[in-house]
Length: 331
Picture 1 (cartoon, rainbow, N blue to C red):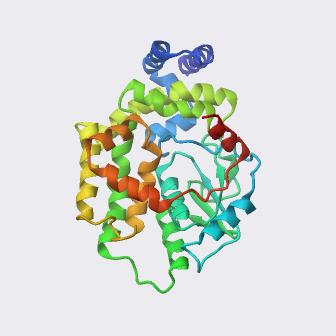
Picture 2 (picture 1 turned 90 degrees about the vertical axis):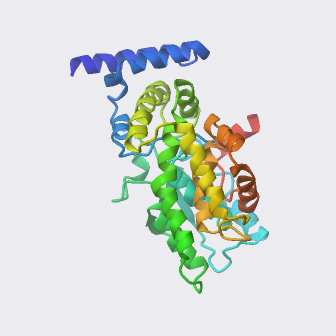
């Protein structure tokens, strides 16, 4: 126990000292962390990552610190409704998503909300304290509040919203149901071994934590290196668990499997996306500009479908926070 505490303290000091270290220095710090796995997993949050009880982060642009001032939720709502909502039969007044910015299941819900032009606000949950959802008996994300009603679990959330938007439609067909299940039971399991495949990719993936998400200053410092080290190790365990021999080959195979499933159609839904299209797009969207995403578009046929989906989903209907908008303006 004492050795573990000392190791964690040493790691924290090293991270604080080397947080701004570029290139080779970052890799040396990561390698030092990997040599002391007990220190890198001493955090309850990282322990949950290692045990698989928490989905590992997938980087993307975050909305910033939870509780930051909203620029104008009303303006976002008005703009979306002026554009013409695909969910015209269902126009809720207040939609709030409790999420981890990088969680693939949260991103499935966001893809659905964006496609159906349903304006929503986001509360970024601190994965360590979870203080933002202390009020809820359900302690996982996503949690969606729709006009005060709580909805849990990404697939169940999407099913409930779809039923409200299309109350007269028949149940989803067998093909659509099959591929939605494939996303949850296969595609998401291929992502992590690719995102954290090498030390470089692990650091790339955790870079966003130092500047985005709901973390304190010290949590950001520790998370970048200890998180990258922990998830580099986790990715190897997940690779073995899911019988993956070559990470990239498995990702490319999944992409090609999806393109084959389209059978020459623009979308799985035919001329317009269905829930399977939105699920695949939702979990892939956050990694599009990571190395794994770039490689997948370069080496498979999925790029054309992805671009069609990007245009079909259109602009997000998420109400941006001031800090998020300012960060985008600086890019």
